[in-house]
Amino acid sequence: MGGRVLSVASECVPLVKTGGLADVVGALPGALAPRGWQMRVLIPAYPGVVAQLGAVREVWAADDLFGGPARLLLGRVAGFEVLALAAEHLFARLGGPYSDGSGDFRDNPERFAALSWVAAEIARAGDGDGWRPDIVHAHDWQGGFAPAYLRYRGVGVPSVLTVHNIAFQGIAGPERLAALRLPPEAFSPEGVEYWGNISALKAGLVAADAITTVSPRYADELMRPEFGLGLEGVISARAGVVQGILNGIDDAVWNPESDPEIVPYAARALAGKAQNRARLVAEFGLGEVAGPLAILVSRLTHQKGIDLVPEAVAAFLAAGGGLCILGAGEPWAEDAMRALAARHPGQVGLRIGYDEGLSHRMFAGGDAVLVPSRFEPCGLTQMMGLRYGAVPVVAAVGGLADTVIGASPASLAAAAATGVVFHPVDALAFAQGLRKLSSIYADRAAWGAMQRRGMKADLGWGTSAARYAALYEGLVRG
Ligand code: ADP
Image (cartoon, rainbow, N blue to C red):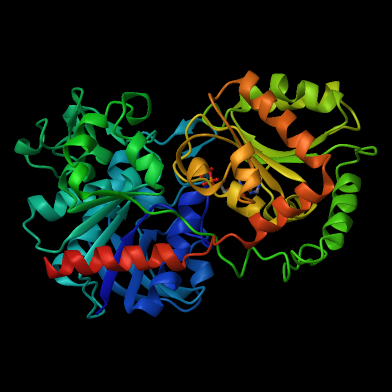
């Protein structure tokens, strides 16, 4: 079997990325093509997007899409087809996809409602290029209205909503119902209403035919109040159509044997990794690091547990460990990392900013990657760490718990451990995890074996693509 899928999202690698969502949206078309599913990706034409698409063709236009004219431009990037929604009044803005220096754009609900509206329109009437999807696959709150519009407009194309992060919900005041092109009856607990407001994510959760999230553990967590952020009841009520499907990482991009950013190395010959370590120490201007060299590549936010880092790493550093940090985010977190680096010159190195190339060099040179997230739907950096022999030290949440086999007497005896998993998510447990890491590091044979197991773990898209394909097939068959 097989068919056509319209993927609708606010980010897509290589066109625009602020986080893992973009990696996933950009990877799915290539992962599903061999299974007979042709995917077109609908995203906003932010400044700079169309230029990356090469030759584009206008396939559709509207005079009034949420307050201004809009066009749909069909192009290609990285081997898949993209439908870029050009609408100057919504997307021709400086800054990031969601905000500029002065904060989130106030009309974000309308901006992404427009995107979702066009998704439903393509499902109803085709994209103007004679292409009509069998499935609409919406991502996060920015795609959340798409299943709702399909339902309210009576378009009989099945939909999937994937939750990449429930913390972002697309909230709008109730007075915006009509502006969001929703009928009055939509404003109910069974519809888009969420604690007196409108939620785009909830709209998708109640209307989609199937819900996925990016790890099985996160799927379970979302039904609990600690993680569901007020939507646990909505998700529990739909438990029968919820499943967790792990993200993969792109083996072509994340491969230590062929990565152009690094001195290549293989699991059977880790000497090459030592060269990358020496280069990384030099690049960050550190002194000699006798213990493990840890890395942190992350958005610097509360979710990522950045506030736990200074206290947790104190003993680790005192025992001779090192730390290289790359990230950007909330001002308090950037300041905390600056203060940490200033307290430990030669031992803690810091780059504030976003640097894809440097992140590759860090995974190649690091002995360990730290991921102390309070919640983590899937997480990619622990998988990149596994692939590059940078042993993950992770909190026991979401996709982190699903992808890393924590060191314990049992898992070490069974030669199964690939990292360190700590619980609860606090500075003490994190520090204890680092102590465990250092003691395994001191046993060279055990350490090398653990690195090699991680490097050989199955982290690609194969298994997960098969699960998405099976989901699509089930929906199309009804
Ligand atoms: P999230 O999407 O919540 O930020 P993920 O772990 O799912 O977290 O994905 C983060 C992605 O962004 C990974 O590919 C990671 O390597 C990358 N990344 C995060 N911060 C930086 C940075 N400062 N520089 C380069 N890459 C980064």
